Image (cartoon, rainbow, N blue to C red; front, top):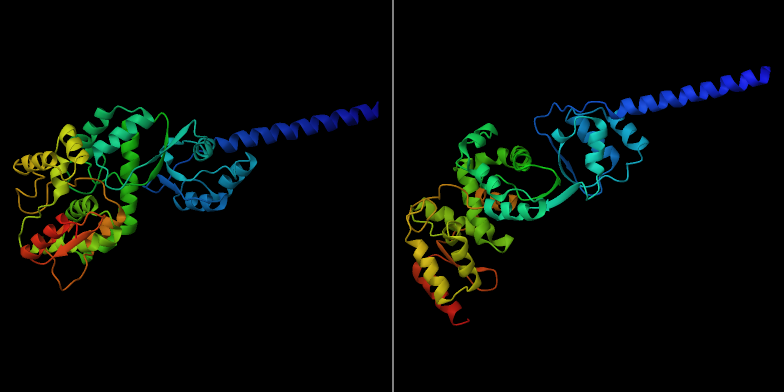
Amino acid sequence: MYMQKHVKRYILGLLSIVFLCILSYSSLLTLPVSCKDENRILNIPRHSTADSVAKVLDEKGCINTFMFKLAIYTTFNQSRIKPGLYNIDDSSTLGELIKLITSSSMNTKKITIIEGWNIYDIADNLSRQLNINKDKFINLCLDQEYIQSLNIPFNIQSLEGFLFPDTYTFLSNYTENDIIETFIQHFMNIYDSHIKTKLSSSHLEFIDVLILSSIIQGEAMLTEEMSTISSVYHNRLNRRMKLEADPTILYYMTPEDLLLFKDKPGSSESSKVFNKYKRIDSRHNTYYHQGLPATPINNPGLKAIYAALFPENTDKKYLYFVADGTGGHIFSKTLREHNRAIRKIRRGY
């Protein structure tokens, strides 16, 4: 009889411990995630560990390091962390955060934004991969009231240039607003950590740097030429010459004409299309207007932005360049040299 009572007490005690563990585990996963850092984008590089992610979350003031590690280890998710850019605002609890950064591809989608894509390219890509409304995305990128609500510390006319090229991890149910706000938060993080402190070296305002870098991004196929291309445009701006940058013309072509121009490069048809747009009085036409276009013409990467900030310091004072047919360019100081280079390329060297 005594033995039976002892066994019952032991079982009840064990069940109580199990119940308390379950209760504690449940409470742990419902701990609130509320970041003090205004930047809500969590960047998880490849090969990140639970320890490194816990440290970043702690630095952002989102969740205590010990609590995060305890939760991710007790759920056996420490080896399932997936690299990417995550919007922490999508997770109100610790359990939701762990699910977000360890989700399978069924719940999340990795989207890579290519350097030099404009808002129309990005909208087209997102509509195919995430089934978003392409027109709504574009309209939001151009909507002044919506742009002001994002609290971007610059006076801008559109979000062109601010959708930073990178690989993002989006939830499959993200709305157009969610995606844009993730882009903007990441851009501002890049600006604060990599660009802001370098602006003092340039005589240009940041928006002008971004516009110029988008032209450089549109011109350069070779990264090593970016700073030289930048020097050409800086030299032309300093001399009050028109930039005459071809990518600015392509920016306002209709999709049909742009396709024709790209499908038949160097043909009489593409030349006819290009010359037609050169004569249009567009605020982006650098053949028609002096100075920089009204807005960026695409979303440049960090290397193009650095090239705009730090043009090649050359005594040659290049003012012209022409594509050499291999991805590079021939640079010239005078119009005579430039025309000679064009003839040389047409003859096939």
